[in-house]
Amino acid sequence: MQHVFSSWSGGKDSCLATYHAIDWGLEVRFLLTMMDEKAEQSWVHRLPAGLLRLQSQAVGIPLVARRSTMTTYEADFKEVITALRQEGVSGGVFGDIDIGEHRQWVERVCREAGISAHLPLWQHDQREILKDFIKLGFEAVVVATRAELLGEEWLGRKIDSDFVKHLDELRQTKEITYCGEVGEYHTCVIDGPFFQKRLEILKTNHVLRDGYWFLEILKYGLKPK
Image 1 (cartoon, rainbow, N blue to C red):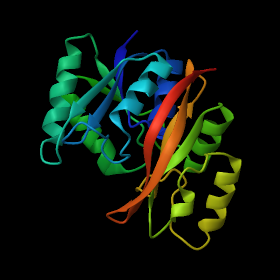
Image 2 (spheres, rainbow, N blue to C red):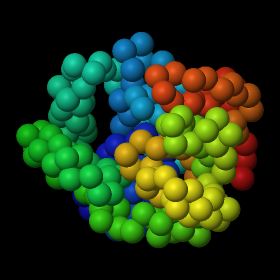
Image 3 (spheres, rainbow, N blue to C red):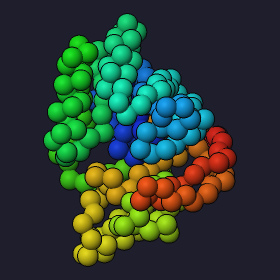
Image 4 (cartoon, helix red, strand yellow):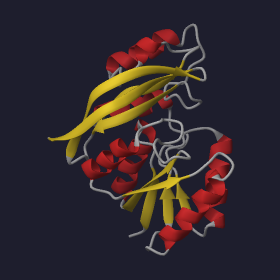
């Protein structure tokens, strides 16, 4: 059995990729999240460090959180996965779907670090990915949107069949991918089939920054399932 880490954003795609990797028989030893310069939030999704630790507890897989900057991101990423090799890890799992540049970067960085790359969602239909995510029993909410495409009212919205229908309608007038693969929206997973506990989001605030709406998560916790 190959031991791997999962490149973990806390969102639906990385979570579903992790689920499929486990189903394939891979042993996911660590969740790897790259954090901002202050190690307070994750890159892109802007999830607080404490919430990511609770997600890690909920799924029962240790979190490795590495602080980084835009200029040192690749070097820091390579450094941390090289360290994970010393723990017996020989592969990484990624939630990329169809952006060729992302796959090329992932495969190159993994190759240079001496490990293999696994992309369970690669080239799958994005609408089907969403339907699969929902059918399997995962729960997630929207935590960020590109303001010019999705308004503030989308923050906190649950990823469910109604969400997919609303995207169907919106795609008639706007260029939006179903999984938000080019940054239209981001999510936070709160429960799922391999979660041992459920994540609760208890207090939030809405923040507009650099053309994006963010659901600033101020209070959170875990509850038994």
